Length: 128
Image (cartoon, rainbow, N blue to C red; front, side, top):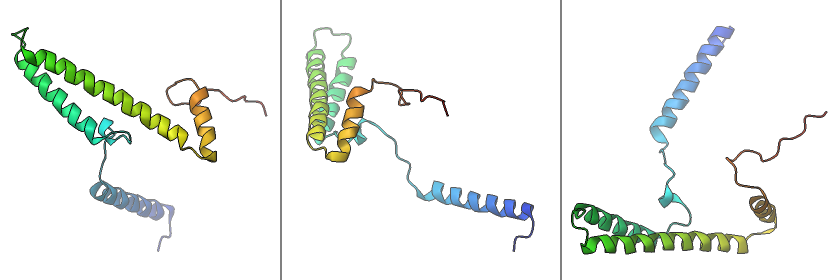
């Protein structure tokens, strides 16, 4: 039984510590990266791997300016980035076409608010 404020505070800190320890040991930590984006495809993964592989080969042949690896890397990199842009654009268009009534306001807000750091774009008035 908790009779004093100090006992309450101690019990609360112990419970909080137990919860935080349990969370840190059981909840997996995820990192946000390009591959975890909803528009990422297996094709993009393959193109990225190929472009990186050719980039390493091109780097190894950096002392041979006319080696085929330089041109192959350039074309693979261009193809990867073109496909990436096309996939993002297609995903955006699909999302806009499939929006329902509540999402129309979200679309309006996304299209009308200028790009910022994520904060509110307007400061509300402080009048009472």
